[in-house]
Image 1 (tube, rainbow, N blue to C red):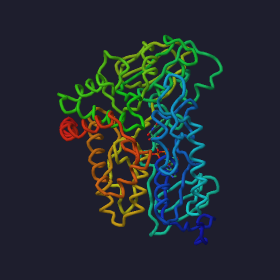
Image 2: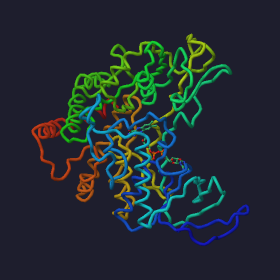
Image 3: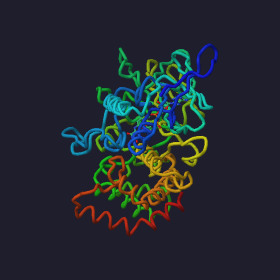
Length: 467
Ligand SMILES: Cc1cc2nc3c(=O)[nH]c(=O)nc-3n(C[C@H](O)[C@H](O)[C@H](O)COP(=O)(O)OP(=O)(O)OC[C@H]3O[C@@H](n4cnc5c(N)ncnc54)[C@H](O)[C@@H]3O)c2cc1C
């Protein structure tokens, strides 16, 4: 794929990459796009990433992270992650496996091998896309260019920021011990107190991990600027009766909800949403999944600081806009406050300058990127492709979660009207709402579909009003 040198630049010969697509980002979305595209079109793809290999943010994630939902919903369309296996023991027995960091990275390496073996995909690791169709190696300084006919694919538009790579969003005094969450398993001496800073999945993982290592719940101070709603993992499973039952519950709750707060309380009653503290009304709805055993453990952490965002950490003291809170002098502060789900403006997926990967069906970034890859492979006209795949945002506030659900449902209706896309998406395990071909069916599935048919229209209309 690497063609003849074209000209000199600062002593380096700029090489032309001869490819039909230049994919910027070899994380989950870039890999899902390339896999679906190359499985359905005879094209040549160059994938660049500033990291040393494929797998995106997982390469730098904390060691105790796992997917928060089923492995089957994650990865690429051609290759099932986790083999569809159920957990055989432990507190999540009967639920789908959730891959660990090392399993995810090993999976993407295998997927890369298959892609490269096809002779149509080449990875340019440690290479930065600097704009203007130009890529520069961060190791050798080598520059590469792609021609005007090569389509640029932005597979980093919604890439998460992670604590290991982003400084904490608060000031750190000289004598304070602030560490990214990744450093917790490498501590050599136990402090008398841990301070966990953050409201999302990383912070909940940190608390659960500390508790699993025998830390007393009273030795944890949890700075939680917002309280989160989280999805009950048991109802986000790759079983159509379970998943569609959850969507039907959501529509039924929305239909009669008097406000967004009321909607989420109804979803809690229906076993769909969870909150850590039943005395507090959450304002955050990024809605990762959580298991009931995790919820129970999180509730044992009673020292929760709700003073908004932390502005500064000093030895023995946490400072907020409205005052300060004393902590132990030797407290270790775990930074878990990065933006794991980015909130950026929606843009059309297909534009002249780039194909910008975003979720299509609500959430599920891997399915969205794979769908865009399939549609790109099978259609010519960008306007038509944009009509079939309008993007949907991630949730953050309750209103944004409602908007995500409405836009995601509209998008699912748009792409499902095309028979070939419907057939493809029913085959793909990444699609949470599919009924696989040959599925035996069940009374529970019939019941869920019946409720969906009766409540979707009015539920979505009400959600649109509320958002
Ligand atoms: C801890 C954590 C757990 C999560 N768990 C889940 C989960 O269970 N399920 C789920 O659906 N989502 C989950 N997410 C959400 C996340 O959005 C998805 O996991 C997904 O991996 C994001 O993929 P991405 O391709 O957008 O980003 P990334 O994986 O970050 O990939 C983007 C890549 O682009 C590269 N890049 C950026 N700019 C450039 C440039 N200029 N030049 C070259 N390369 C560049 C980066 O190096 C990066 O490797 C989680 C997020 C976090 C932080």
